[in-house]
Length: 440
Ligand SMILES: [Zn+2]
Image (cartoon, rainbow, N blue to C red; front, side, top):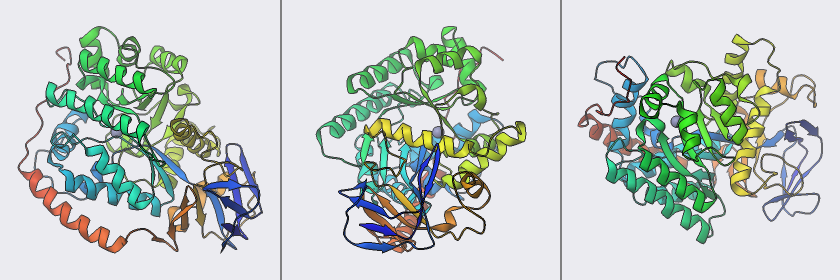
């Protein structure tokens, strides 16, 4: 395959813009060669976006009815919304959620999803359902099951077992587009035994934990009451902090905790829109260092929108933030995925990189070069410009339509599943699990 006539961004960090054809051979960017040509004249070709933290299981929650008392804090948001939704999920609704979420990812130019899945009443095999769904669309993914003690020790053990089972499958099967991590919900819903079991599974498979950390103050309070240490201290003592581990949010990490996380070279997934939506506070992005990637926490997978919102939120507090910040964070998101796939060039369009790319129908109204691209990203580009998407050399979107499935049928099927899921949800009351708060 040869993509002709486009302006090509071969790297986001540092930015490198060239005007040359893109050659794809055996699923990778190549210096030359390729057969069929696709005319990309007047287009911009960029590396596929990576969403470093999402929850596909929430894809059918959009607009769902809510009849309980409005939640007043983060714990109540979990008890009254997400920990009801996840218990209502069954195999069919997990599949529909993954298909809808995967479809929206591709159509918005996101080629890799790092997902954190929960379905406490359908744990065993759930990651296979997510994997199959994403494979049918052609999405690259890093999957895990969200282990937690909040639904009892049996489900905690089932969560660990599902991660182990899936990681064994990843190791044994040929799943070229999928890798795994060990998922864990958050310190405040994990017993010492379960946390230890997660770390053991991760160590055995040479992968990291994917866990919410210090998203809300309640997580920190619970850790202190539980063991006398804050969240990162608890995770560090359990052996959970290392270069493979991914911490989602990290909003309330203090200086000492940030020191632990940075010393361990663990990654942070920053979820700006989710943090704002849940009123949990602002992550200390400048203190957190280089390993900050961007996720949506389930608010779709549009990384143009997420990165732009994160940038404006940061600029509101720190006007010195450079325009390249969103590109650096997206490049780090791709490096995170690249580490999971042992593909250090993932997220670039350099020769040898996996051919994960997006063709944007974008007629730049001002000069576009290395020095101006960040301005185009923040002030001009959006998912609206996504025309074609390639993952591992496979066209998964052409002319704004999915190539492997009928997207109208997919959406119609999801609608039926959403109605069913919402009816099931009405029967489920608020979750009773509470973090420990030391009595205040
Ligand atoms: Zn999350």
